[in-house]
Length: 169
Image (tube, rainbow, N blue to C red; front, side, top):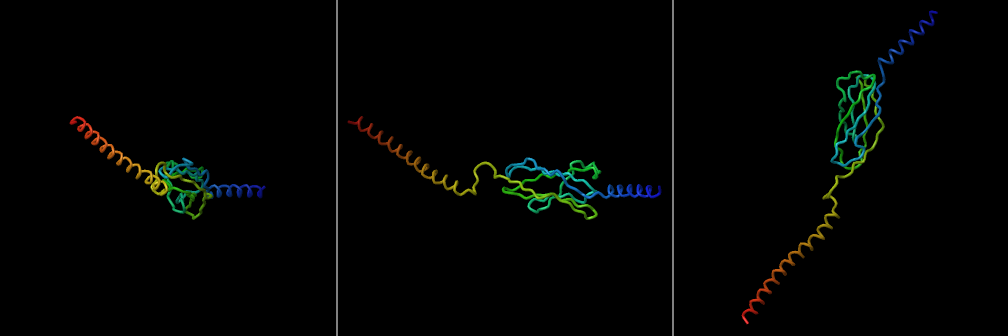
């Protein structure tokens, strides 16, 4: 009987110790919107569970940014806590992940994921082929309009001179 009580007490202590010292875990990483342009704001969220973290960090192309708590009043980390950050991303592919660190130095992180950010809509000056095509079209068009106005003026003056000659005859 004493052995059974000792084993039961030992099991209870092990459960309490595992609850009091929960390993940190990150889950449910999300980004909204899932696609966008370089002018959009992206909201990244992640769920943390474990001991009170020293930091929950978002990494975009290995640049760390501290995340904010969704509910700062919630101080119970063992049942989970959500974190978020809002960022603008540059055009192209961004590799991102989340990392949490506890006071005991335990770390956990999510797998790295990518998001593709499109260029903003509209004309971009860095497309030299588009700029050249516009200039190649625009220069002859403007020159043609200038010449048309000049010929039009010359034609009116010639018609006026012919009218005056006809009247004088």
